[in-house]
Length: 159
Image (cartoon, rainbow, N blue to C red; front, side, top):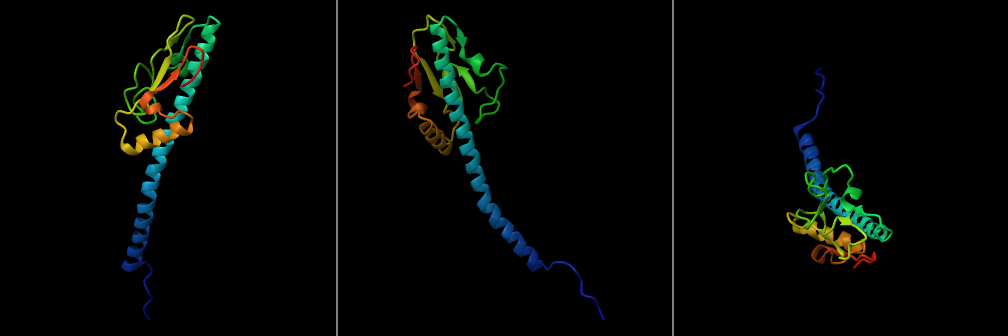
């Protein structure tokens, strides 16, 4: 009597591949959405930190202590913008790339009388990323931050 051969049939293998394909079709878009929203949360966190450091710099300036907000935020001078890992997170001037935070003034001293304006870069962002960034910044309490920037006055006020 002949012994049956062990193994899988072609139909069984096709069914398994179909199931794996269906699971991948569901998981890959969700993973991409998760990555986009986590990057947006990271940018919102960077903005929150930049606002705090700027307000602290103005408070320290009132006591005569000069502060450089960029060196306070990034003492090692490393790069690591969440949306563009090869670009710096914080820059002086207007932010140029998606997710970057720009400062109008970096050196805050007792004689600084102009407000600090923080901008969030939009160049290179796709529509979904911009929408996620806007939503995260609104949730963090900065409505309109993508278009108008965030203004921190020498008295420490935020608008």
